[in-house]
Length: 163
Image 1 (spheres, one colour):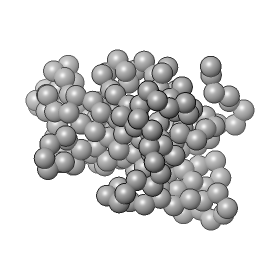
Image 2: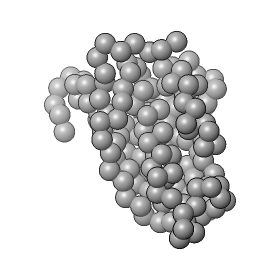
Image 3: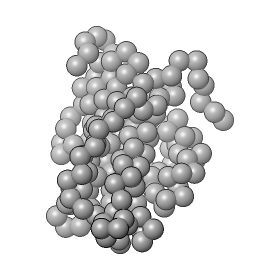
Image 4: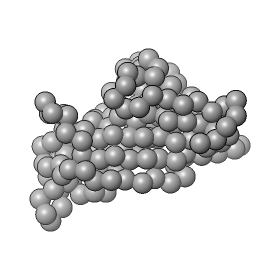
């Protein structure tokens, strides 16, 4: 972990939210402007539930078109859900930030009709870089963990938020 004045550790997933979140549609932060232009995520039926400083919650239902030949949700769609929550969280403060890399662990299968919620939390920022953890859970009484994702972000210099 980097050291310096801009390094900011954040609590783990199962701890309380590090910062208050803003319900989707009511925010004016840079992540909401980015979300409004995100046709890929919206086209997959994703909903931005909330966002705040370094956090985001995104929901998606697994459709028949997202199921692979084994009868389970295709990993690419699970990655996309986690990546979308990561993108919203790392752009919540501005400036424009992109993914520099990510790792994913598929913990349990998801099936057609499952509703999944991805919760992203900033772990730390250092210089122009950041680390974010995303947990994707099935919306069921057990909150079954489906995916664990670690994203690495990078602020892009000289790129202004598009209007």
